[in-house]
Image 1 (cartoon, rainbow, N blue to C red):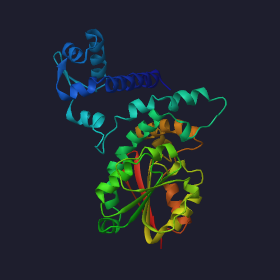
Image 2 (cartoon, helix red, strand yellow; image 1 turned 180 degrees about the vertical axis):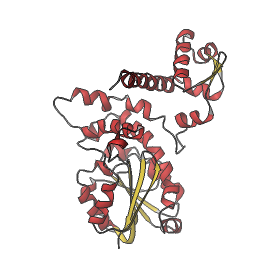
Image 3 (cartoon, one colour; image 1 turned 120 degrees about the vertical axis):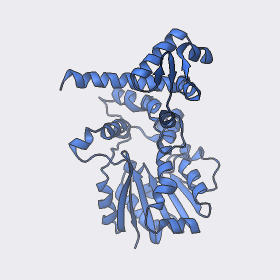
Image 4 (cartoon, rainbow, N blue to C red; image 1 turned 120 degrees about the horizontal axis):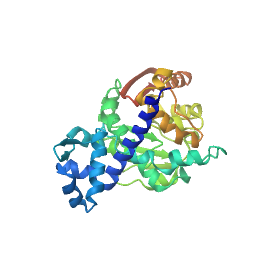
Length: 322
């Protein structure tokens, strides 16, 4: 351990707070519209000029904004990454989400007691933040990721039955409906509040823990996006998914590929996923290495297994019911 390593952590914290402040205040969004001096930026937003100049220097130091003379700006890629919720590369939601109470603050408060919580104890603001940070996973997965799975694209285009497990507030269902309009959709989630937030999609909605879900008619595709690691009993879920599929149907698990090596754990993606685990631990859960899903599917009789990576923090594992 060196002072440089520790000071880099301090610098990273300052950079994180600078981005979050810029997103919440509108500073970043305003610079994305047009470059401006600190004084002009302050005038546009009705802020204190001296404080805005301080933020601009900090944002420049963190590599967030550009500067030419006294004028600050935002390059198009940074604007996409921080502001475009529809982009598969969007990461802006991570910054304010990591500062929410349910992440590090509550973890520290209950470090001694180990008191757990569940989704129905989380604030609506946190649930909304989870939906926002999960949206890029859906953007990468639907339709492009699903189209990479052999034979699946043709079935989806022709029309079939899709079940999304742990559908949350329904952003995945909305995207599935737009990408595959010929398909009928069902969403199941154990959190009644999240289900109640679903709007603007024609889908059958079911409130049930995944370990208890049962369905009368079979599905061609069962999809789980960034939630399989949260299941209390992934073997029971895999068994119920198998029962819910038609012969030849696909089970697709889209999730964080938590590193299985020390080197991977110390990488930037590994450190981010370690941060996610501060919340996961509170719901009595931890992220899983991707390889665990290979073992899970093979153990429950799935065949034609495969996987691919969509980003450093996003991998897809799939298999079929014989």
